[in-house]
Length: 556
Image (cartoon, rainbow, N blue to C red; front, side, top):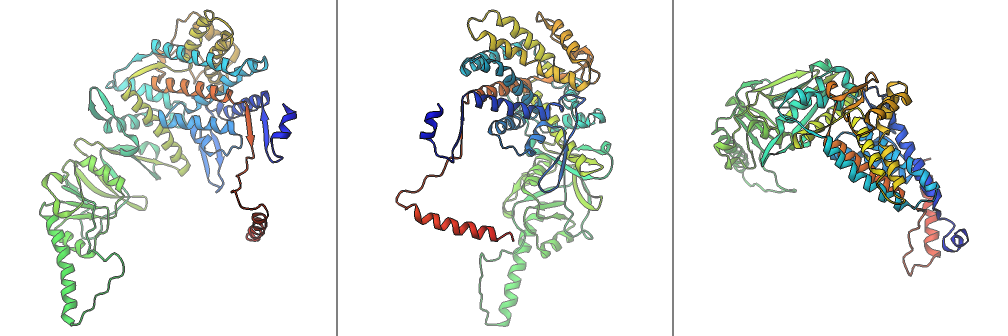
């Protein structure tokens, strides 16, 4: 191999191949897994990350940590992608994915040393994955989405591993309220829950965490246009949402108008005024109490509105406007002259402007059937709020997953142990070489309960042996570790659950990623850009040197 390499490659190319690469990839992946291994489970540690700008992030959300890392090794990069996929797909289980994938690669290392072919290992892994998912299906149980207590237990066990778990049911309550509020029935028993679009999380430093709440409606950081003249509190407001500017249209670019007579000027001004007056009259026909526009609102329009006793808000974000529309039942109108009675939103119970801290916030709350909502988070510091927000995102994703697919599996490592036991049993019936990697995959699943036990600080070996004994013949599938105390307990009684969607996705992602990394046998770095044909080698070189000099001079 080495003899040919000099002939094939340039000096600038670095090429590693064969066993060396496998080892490097496995080392890198294990390193990534080790970084966040301690953040798994209720007794998890927090990580503090400093970014380039000097800001700090304090978190134990696997994805948030890995997002901030700047990693050089390509294999480690793809491990980080994993947790991102998991976060976007199901929103929780980001840490477990990485720990699992790291473990899968770790157990594969022994086979690579024994000169197994990577594809054999991958084939065994994929077989193990299929059996693992079918084992999941067996132990999953359906849950009633409308049963509040079960939902609470579920979301709580998901964020029990997070920093906010010390505030008890608070975050879980917020998450369930918010997600059930914005769920839309699509028919055929399907629910669509769009967290990103219709749940806004407003973080306002100050107050206590317990003051956080889910508003039955929306709030945004705006005040009415003329605070003195307009009402700041309206009961049962009629709301009109506009997407157009309530001001005189200016020319696109510089427009010149030559006026010969003095009166023409006043005619021009009058035209502008009448135009705005017309707009306002068209809107006021519908007797609104609140007019909200995404664009500008001129002083004159403001005057007409305040004379009619209508409050107005201008320059609102498009996303906020969509939320108000969903909450109050209004329709966003593009031209005032096309307004209809059906476009007026009457679903809101109260419009009010409050001062929180030193800023004004407008609340549109007490909606009849809101399909959008705002979660108001209060807390002591910015870092705390950011962390709470991340936890809330996870909690809402879990609530969403259950609403979409109401199946549960036991938490606390019980699922992994059951899957592991089932796979161990099946491995004896597998013919040929694949038997050993298959068995190793079964053992790799034990990484999760083992890590849980490590983080609780109990005797790992004893706990694991006891658990394996309980699970050995595939029964007691609900026995796992209570992450707070480290005791072996029945997860059904302790109400420690995981969402089926999260687990299944985690298994799939982890095993597929492990297979992909094992299949890499060559890393070539330093690939040059090819020169354009016809350009002689001499010319570009001179230019490049000049450029390099100039660039160096800049920082001084």
